[in-house]
Image (tube, rainbow, N blue to C red; front, side):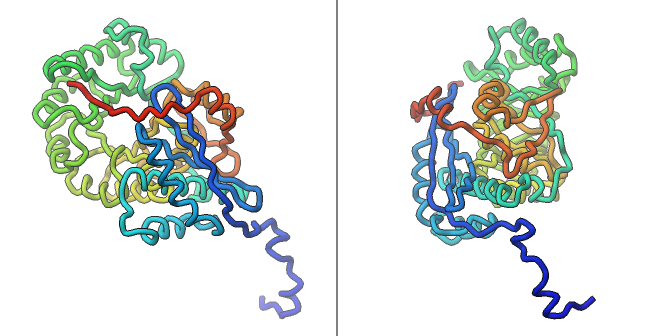
Length: 397
């Protein structure tokens, strides 16, 4: 039915339906603290409407660089309307400098992107996952990362006891870092003994991921994989150097256990190289480093075209954990979310109950607008002051 001009003028305005009013970014606020072994860096984007968006820029051992990159971005964002994460991403990555690549730069860009999605969800009154098209995974399955850090003693019996307790708590999948000290033959024997202990204790009730921390070569990775194959680990993570996708392709072709990698890769272009070399069955981008919510979704879609699953890297603060959940909820090839189980109680406390609680090895999306998580940064930074842990992460074989 055609409407006359008189009828059109009589229609209620968009504002009457609760359409968001324009606003502008006024400033960045950065919070830093140190929880256990890592410095956490958070971003709050303020607007003249009073709405804020939260992001996270945790960059292990390099918090100062992440903060500097955020401060570099701040004056280019002040005065802009925060809506339209895609256009801001395009401008911030391609438009501000031809020297645009690097971990610190991408971490800052990612934090801004996460905060802009949070702001947009709050302005529209809907969760970020809904803005992205809705969830097809909810709840989302998890694995308990850095699991061996909670061992009372790193012995076969210690692994057995902790595996039984972990299953009692409802977890279905875990990951730990293999022994890093000693020669490769010794490390392989110790790793097999640890996995055997878990299998003896709980059988196949726990899926097992193993972090190899880029400390093996092609020959010893295959040796380890063949030794572990009867114990059916879920995946071997980062066995060799991430800068060499060709070698990872050779590893994946010969390993009887799926290879997972990608926490240190940035953007689709680097993942394309890995996928072209068939270097992983599971990719692990981090929403804080690989380009934020906007880019990690594209990485997931790229991986899907290669038949590869995605299990995002995530072991940082509450904002990044929840941002990763929202980003993955609508991805068909989503496999598992990495989850820092040792920090659950703290995050739930400082987030006033808005941080999701795992149950039976999975977690449901927050239902509030935006990311749906509210962090008491004053309390978090008071209890866990920033220590600037800019150490050199030395891996000793």
